[in-house]
Image (tube, rainbow, N blue to C red; front, side, top):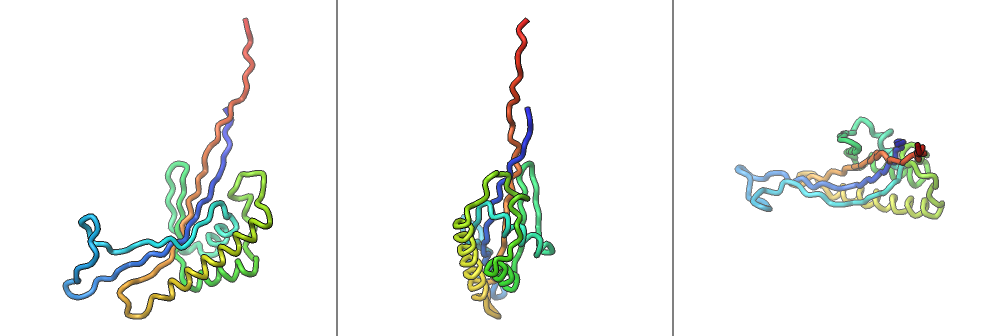
Length: 169
């Protein structure tokens, strides 16, 4: 058997609303399944196999990275400020993302130019909306907003059978 690797990159951008306690003692808040809700996640965007965006975020904001690995799965989280998202948005708008395709995807066919243009436009929309959502957090508010880029990289071995000739005795 011969081992090869195939990599899959799935990423999402999500917003987390963190509810701060109020009052002394804190007033009753939302109860779910018998427990107090202290935060909620909102799906702001997602990408499947967008290595250029991933490579840029990981390289540019490596100080903000939290990394977990288990088996063939690796998860990376990057907490992004509004300024950092504006930087990403500008980089996408100016078509300045680095070419990271070969680093992550082991497919022989690259995406078509029209697909790249659609993905670029969609990514710009996602980051524009994320910046606007984060801006809703005002001074003195009881809810904090934070934005997290999370990527899951699957590095899966592919087993291929090698034909073996049998010798008849």
